[in-house]
Length: 299
Image (tube, rainbow, N blue to C red; front, side, top):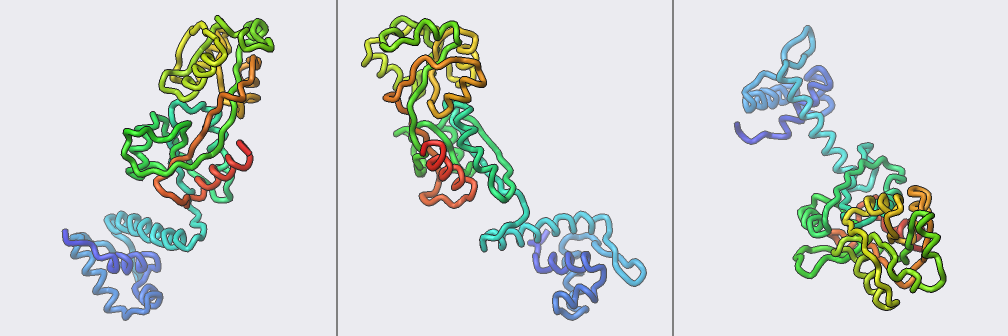
């Protein structure tokens, strides 16, 4: 098939919409014979009859209906593209593809993403959860609009990415009420030998906790190590050990899992980043995420 001429497709689309060549010609400011000739050319290119006579007007053939559906979507998207470039709302939901690092607590991810759903324009959210390395690779291919993570890109990853610091917060230790009562004392040394549920070894929080243990002379009894931030809370809820979570979600963790605060560690800080493929953020939903995080979540 020869290359499709979109001017011819536009002429066909207008005739199909208007129902007659005369009305379409008036809209396009073309002579009727010229318009009819262009549609015949399109039919020759496609090798299919698209229009047939129906009384004084025209109607679509079966193949004409198929071509019209494609043409309608093509020209609707073209109009929305022009409107989007001018900064005007298009009526189509704004697509937001977010990569969430698997080490990021789910409650933190929700708190970060939630403002994007509060825009005046409707948003269609697509969330992918993987390691930071895999998400950065997807970002480089423009499969994602932003990556939310608790760490910067590792040195070995050669991806053009820009880190936007959202904020930082302290860490809270939690435990089921019956277990917490044994360790809620003023001195951190009371936690020496206490049962702990720790994040996986690649977690930035794991390294920060280990440094704090060393500074305070605490030797935790490690019951388990978890890559999944939700699973560690479920085990903590069951009373299997003390676990840590960012202080910004302290109230939510206590309420959702029925656990009690054991200790707040203001010196054990966690940082959170929005990573983009562009230095200056342009996506309205990504801007909403970053501004809300800095102003409300970490402000």
